[in-house]
Length: 366
Figure (cartoon, one colour):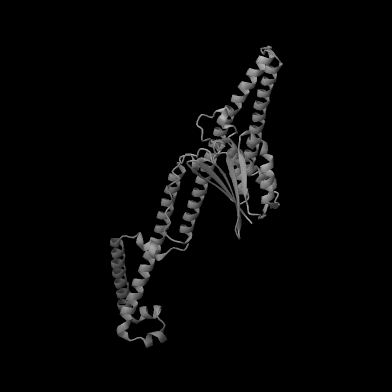
């Protein structure tokens, strides 16, 4: 096993190093005196070839032999300390892993070098990071599921309660005439339609979160798409007393995108602009083209979004109205779905809001 010499020396105290050096010198002196002077020429010829011995002055044999013996002793001490160092490091790593196993995932195994033990420590740390990430994702998934159940239960219960109430009135013939009956059935139609939209939004959002949605990209003329959307929303705009104004200077940029899903993004933004921008009377759609991207800005001139709400505007079930009343209309998933669709397209969607205007900006790569 490769071990860095400096790493081994660092864990040895200065006192132990001094002791090892002193012991090595004492042992070397004893051995040299025993071998060289007690047995004289016989002892020397055992360790040194005669031809080499003749080249070395007699006065140098003792110090050379002394240094060799000191080196051998220090090498033996180093080998001992190296094994001891490995054992200490492994025991320490075991303790650190046990500490991590108790749930303290912020603990990391100490990395002291880039050799085998250091690589092992790095791999353990990587496993801990991945495990922590997986657990965090699992907790987030559980939170999303719980939030989903809570919000869906509320959003389903509200229209269902109204539906049951009006059905009971009809079933018990508690209406004055056919006009009132038609009024009740119209309310029921609207409630059922809202339930249908909510279920569709939930299905689409769940598919996106589970990575179950794929894109079918094709060349899209954005200017033509925006013109078609204006026609699609014309009746709603008239009913709201609003007017849509487009500004694209005759440009017809082509982007590679999934047309149906991209339409869904703009539908959600325009629907929100109609719902919350009635006071401003206008919706402005600006199409801007650069060398690398196409930008669509949709602005309404109703009451602005509070600054505290802006960072959360694309979160699922988030509504600026805290009351969750029927006035808020949709499922609270429209902008979350729009954000997911833009992420799939590797594009961006942003929002900025002032006191009397709100602008959604959609950016697509050309």
